[in-house]
Image 1 (cartoon, helix red, strand yellow):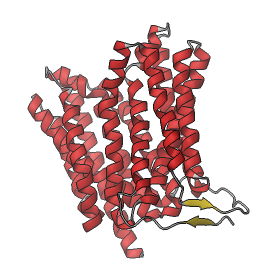
Image 2 (image 1 turned 45 degrees about the vertical axis):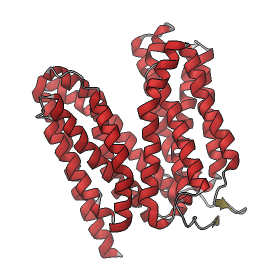
Image 3 (image 1 turned 60 degrees about the vertical axis):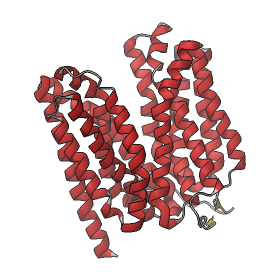
Image 4 (image 1 turned 180 degrees about the vertical axis):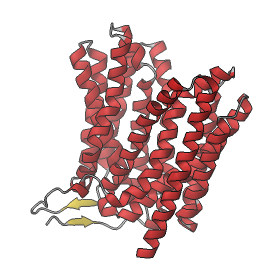
Length: 396
């Protein structure tokens, strides 16, 4: 049997190692989102068709989805710091490749390398950072990590566009590649508290790939990701149907309130329990979707952005922290990968389902049906989570 040596987590949240992982997480997110807004334009600009450009862009998510279950296994069995080094090297190589080649085959290879590096890195970052979070502050600690990702998603696209406009697209890929390279330097100052001792390796089982104990937390999260995918893909079109202008402000409002809510929700969860954040959060998120379908003015749509930020800001980090607490730190890698896998599926399936519905029900009625479906699915997932929690308390 493989034995694991785990050093106790620090007594305070804001320790040096925790801060280092937050910085690394922010740099990784910044690197990823810097190129999101320019990639399709860059690919079509070098002579690749729009359809094929879409395949290349989507290949990143597909690679992440396929590799995600194995990322947790690696995070639980291998040194997390060295895994992060490897993942950031893959991301840097993938980004640099886009800057220096127009060969289609190589572009596919570099996109796959980027997706693999991102999947491993995003899983291992969580697995690593929880070892530096006190048990009684898990919700707050996970909440702040979500903020580091939010900073990247909110600021990096504008930075990427600015660099592309001023210097060129190739220079943007080089700049994005510098960030994961910098994280490798920061990782020199990291230590991994979770060290496998030398000895015989236990065989790999299905529970090393998918952790069943994480599923009650994963399903509600997947429905929230389902909503995220639909909002990202169809909100602008919904606004066009309504004749609403300035809809881009929705994403700013959502990001600002999400930034404010996440740490507060984490503190509340740590103090009172997961039921005080997940259930109200999912109810508020469902309400925002029901209301969005019947919103015909910008101000009302922005109000739904506020509601959704409050709801998801409360529920998502609490579900993730609760998942890790339930499964245990020693299997935090597979717990995280199972949890994120649910998010990947929800994010990918959501736009497909919405597209199928809108193909059958045109116009405003179609969008109302889609948003109503989102609200119903969230409430169903919340109900499932309620009974799963009730069963857990009865058993233990």
